[in-house]
Amino acid sequence: MKQLGKPFLQLITLISGLLVLSSFLVGIIVFILFFSFSGVQLPTLEEDAPLVSAIPETPKPTALMDPAGMWQAPDWSKVDESPDADAIKYGKELIANTAEYLGPNGKVKKISNGLNCQNCHLQAGTVPLGNNYSAVASTYPKVRGRSGKSEDVVSRINGCFERSLNGDPLPADSKEMIAMVAYMNWLGTGVPKGEKPKGAGIYEVPLLDRAADPVKGKTIYEQECVVCHMADGQGLPKPDGSGYTYPPLWGDHSYNQGAGLFRMSRFAGYVRANMPFGATYENPILSDEEAWDVAAYVNSLDRPKKDFPNDWPDISKKPMDHPFGPYADSFSEEQHKFGPFKPIQEAIAKLK
Ligand code: HEC
Ligand code: HEC
Image (cartoon, rainbow, N blue to C red):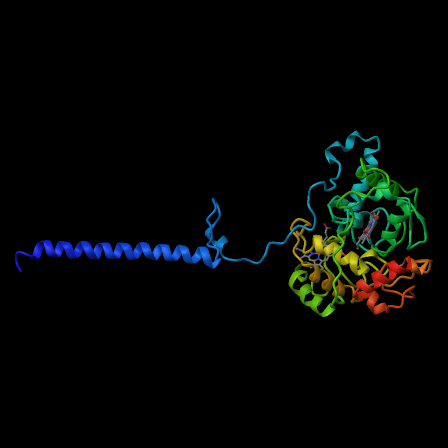
């Protein structure tokens, strides 16, 4: 035994070493085969990709529109090249800080509720799908169903003064009106007559198959909106009384029932692409359903009523989401307010 000892031990060590090695290799092969046939995706490590990216996350919001070819406002630094640069600049200032000039404590006139045009027409009407003014110069004057007649830019601006700002119109020949029209014409530089550039106005949110739900909307409001617009919806007034840091969404100081945002599709489209503040059409935060439901909640709460007896002289021109009858179709006011809108849209298409 003694003579056999050393080589025998060496042999045993060698054999067991080979055994361990071969079972290890077999293990690896089985592992690779298993994953290549099981369809399980192994995480691939890309350069710079942090390890955590392998963990499934909530899906990223997708852009509402391809940014290629989006309308862009003219270059502000070139405004002085325009012959009416002073008017254009004053017009922009009035759009951005309306309350300071024309609000309840306005230094020019006191004719509106404290909102700024820019609260709804973001960054003075220059943001793609932020209710911008890119199509104003190119599409007005135009015949509108609401008034039943041809409206120019002046009367369209006054529409927002009387409804969105729940106030009084400005005279067409006032310095302020002339300035705002000049600014809008300048914004429309290069847009061919009759055309709407890509990203003009408000996003059209796809219609739901159900009615929008104010109860679900309340939960969304509490999660996504309350920090700025406050639990009572009254926003946050600036301490000096010149408008709001966060504008009100309902109540006495908000837009009235004749305003565009009182229509569900306008409200949903505006917030889908722009709210909570910081959202954009490229990085939206709410889903389609959330946008419709929060619109239903906010637009079920109290706000100023104002009569516009001359609106909609031809009732067949009322949009699907005009919440006040009478209608040319047989759907209720309730359905015209909250939806479902698809059947109404079909009925309206047949009427035409
Ligand atoms: C409470 C929100 C709100 C405020 C504040 C507001 N607007 Fe509007 N405005 C709207 C909505 C909604 C529309 C309709 C957009 C649509 O249907 O695409 C609109 C439409 C317009 C249009 C027509 C745009 C187009 O392309 O047809 C003009 C011009 C306009 N507003 C000017 C103003 C001016 C000037 C002010 C300030 C005096 C103002 N708005 C304040 C919500 C508002
Ligand atoms: C981080 C703060 C913040 C949050 C959160 C927020 N907003 Fe706003 N909201 C603003 C500001 C600021 C404006 C005015 C924008 C401006 O003047 O540039 C505004 C404007 C608005 C307007 C148009 C002006 C008006 O008073 O009618 C509506 C409608 C609106 N927000 C709805 C919502 C809804 C719905 C939510 C929740 C889904 C929401 N916002 C969440 C800050 C916020």
